[in-house]
Image 1: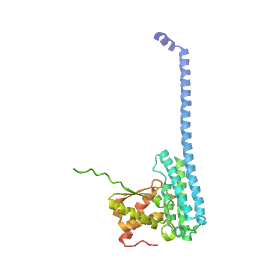
Image 2: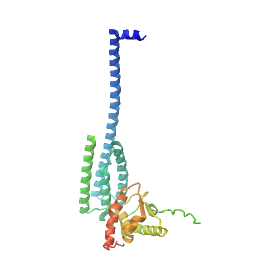
Image 3: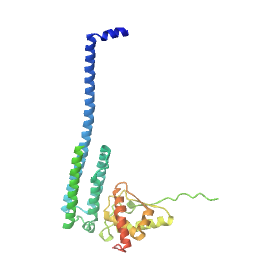
Length: 165
Length: 125
C-alpha cells in the first residue's frame, strides 16, 4: 500500500492535487483569520466608541448643569443631588475604562469630585440652602467657570487619547 | 477559671438615621445641617469610647452630600477630640461615593486639627 502511495506521489496528477489542496487550505485559513481579526477589531472599536460616547454625554450633562448654575436656575438640593447622580455615572464609565484598557482610571473622576467639593462648599450655596434657587455671586461664577474650563480640557484630552488607542 | 470574653461589636452610626437628605453647613442655613449632625456624631463617639470599641460611620443611602456638611460635622469632632483620637476610633464607610473618605482624611481632618492647635473655635449658630 505504501509502495502504491509512493508511486502515486511521483506522478504529475498527485502534484496537481497537492497544489489544489494547498490553495484550498491557505484560502480557508485566510478567510477564518480575517473573520476572527475583523470580529475582534469590530468589538474593540464598538467598545471604544461606546466609552467615548459615555464620556461625551458626561461632558454634555456638565455643560447643561453649568448653564443652570450660571443662570441661577437650581436649588441647593437639586445641585447636591445632581452631583451624586453624576458621581455614580462617572464611576460606571471609569470602571469600563479600567477594565477595557487595564489603566488606573479616568482623571475625570477626581475632577468631578473637586468640583463637587468646591461648589457645595461655597458660602452662596450654603447661605441660600433653603431657597428655591441659589443666586451665585460673580466671584462664585468666575470660580465655577475655571472648573468648567479645566473639566472640558480634561475631557477633550481624554477623548483624543482614547482615539489613539 | 477565666470566662472567655466575647469580642465586643463595633458601634455603628448611620447618617441616614439622622437624615435621608443631609443639609448645609450650619443650623442657621437650613435643616439637617452638619452642625446638627455633629451632636449625633459626638454622642456616638463618646459611647464608642466608653465601650472601648470602634465607631463605624456609614455615609451611604442618603440623597447626597454638600462637602460643607461633612466638613463641619467631622471637623468639629476632630476639633473636640483631636485628630489622633478620632483616627484611632472611627472607620468611615462610603461605598457609593468613596471620594468623601478621601476628602475627610486628606483635607478636613488636617485642617481642623490645625484649627484645634491654633484654638480657632468653630461657629455656633
